[in-house]
Image (cartoon, rainbow, N blue to C red):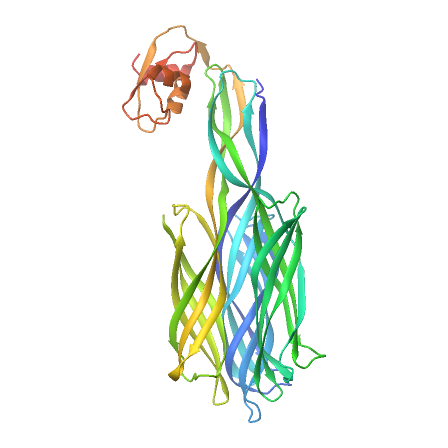
Length: 525
């Protein structure tokens, strides 16, 4: 007998894996003939770009480069500071259990540190440590039966679920470029270092489109013709459109920005300015909140039903929270005096996240790299300030998904006598939280009259509730109904029965053979 059903479709974007992978990029750098020999390196920093990534069976592949700046002391009496700019290319294969082609890959890469080793005056070895944050998603179309039309006396066990159903996903390429001007008196001869980070991320909705808005914060340190050190700070707007059919302000959007290429160079037409060109890829995954009443079990007292079941995992109650924390610490930098601090690089490093039923606790270190002058010599010293911050866990359970992004806000470094520095750094913690929901999906329902007999006796079964029983399980076991059992036994709360409770079960005209046999063995007639 064919069973007529109505179905609705949802698309589940399931998180397959989330992991952090540490790898190292190493290469030798030759000093160009136009630059003096290296005596010693002072500082190395870099900006990472992911040019290409793909998901393969059992692994992912990421290709990119690190645009690196090395400040060094030259082996020359005429100069006291020079810099090298080089590019470290990488291609990394990372094993990911369960990865298959077609899955959605979101990555976020940071350079944790760069080591420099001078081989000789014309050659150095660079070794960069990279942390790659990986999130791999699988899209699954699921059909859910929400109504059965042609089965008499159908008994349904429904459960309500609130889930985030995938609307769509998309990405775009944004090219952002600008000329940053320094002091007009400065004739810039060399870029010593350049830091590029994306801040102030936001989005707006228009008709079938998402407007992505952010800013690239640029900090450039440079050397002038008369051997002075200068700085240029600026921001470049990043604006792009992602096509997304049916998107609205009621939907949830996860936006990720990934740097693909960076170009920072001297402006050939203005001696006191720097030209910056960026290629950035914003990616969006959009969801809508769906309230579903899903059939978890079914049977009929008068028809023998068979069906298949599968379990799917969906994400629910996804939300984002931004909270600022003041990280304070006192550090002592030998050789640092008041007035000669040039720059401080701040890198937040998240080491672990602990979740309890009441709190989400973040532990890590704030890496501070101080660049300063001392006796006309540039120096670099790195130090770390540990931090532990927490926020309320609104879900009141530790079984939640957490995605975290750390940014640096306002900073203050007060240099006192003897190189003692009072550091105050605003740490911005962006937390995306969600819960996994396990859903039981019923499908392939078949109906037949096999294994059904007619029985005319009118007696009752007296059943004693066992551990793990529910009124639904008992009704299904003896081909009765919850309504019949609750009325006959005066049960007001059908969700509340206790072990050892005695329940009378009426006999129906049609009873499955296995239930009759089960009743005879386990119940008192």
